[in-house]
Length: 293
View 1: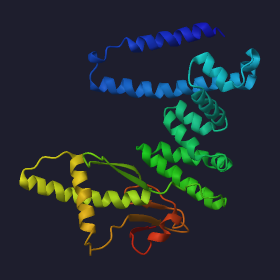
View 2: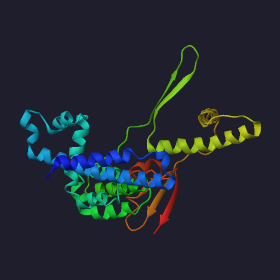
View 3: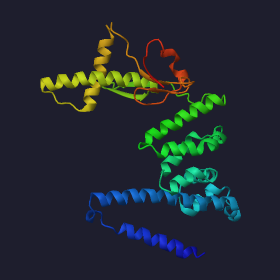
View 4: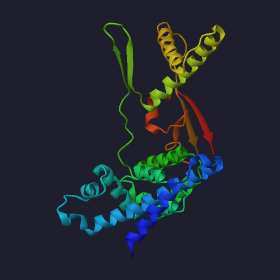
C-alpha cells in the first residue's frame, strides 16, 4: 500500500475543504458542510485510533527506547501524552465494541457518544456492556438530544451496579459554598458547588424569586441583568428565611414506576438522574411525581 499517496490525498482533500469560502455558501449549504465535516472527523478519529493502537500492539514504539506507547505517540505527534493515553485506551476498547464502532462509521452516532459510552462502561461494568452494547446503541441512535442518551446510559449504569451488587459509585462531594468578604469595601464573593439535589432545591427557589424580582422591576421601570436579578433573589431568600413560617423549599423528584423499576429509575424535575438511595432523607418532604406503566 502506498501510504504516502494515501496521506497525500487526505491532505489535499482537507485543503479543498479549507479553500471553500464560507461567505459563498447559503445557510443550508453551511449546515450540510458542518454536519458532514463533524461526521467525517469522527470517522477519521477512529482511523487514527486504529493506526495508533496497531503501533502500540506491535511494540514498535519501544525500538527507540521510549518508556511507554503514550509517551512515544506524544513525541511523534507533538500531542499531550495524557491525550495519547486516552485515545489508545479508546481505540483498544472500541476494538471490542463493534456495534458502537459501526454506528460512528455509519454516522449514526458521534465520537462524543463514544466518549460517553466508555465513561459509563467502566472496567467493572465492561462485560455487561458488551452484552448490552447493541441494545444501548440502538436506543441512543434513536434519540435526538445528546443529554437523552446520557440519561439512558446513567440509568443503565445504576441498574447494572445494583444487579452486580457493586459498591455505589455515584457518591458526590458534599455541597460546599464559600463567601469571602473584602475587608475594605465589604463586598462579598460567592463560590462553591452544590450536589444535584441541593442544586435542585436552590435553583427552583431562585427561579421562583427571580420571577418576582423581574415582575417588580418591570412594574417599577427598573432594568437589571439576569445575574443582578439572581443576586437580588438570593438576598430576598436570605431575608425571608429569618422569619420564615411557610413550607420549606423542596426538590421535585420524578419516579418511573413499573415492574421492579422504582428501585432503579429516579430523576429530579430538571432531568438530572440521581441514585435511589439519595432520596431516602427527602421522602417525607420532597414533591414526588410518579409515572405508572
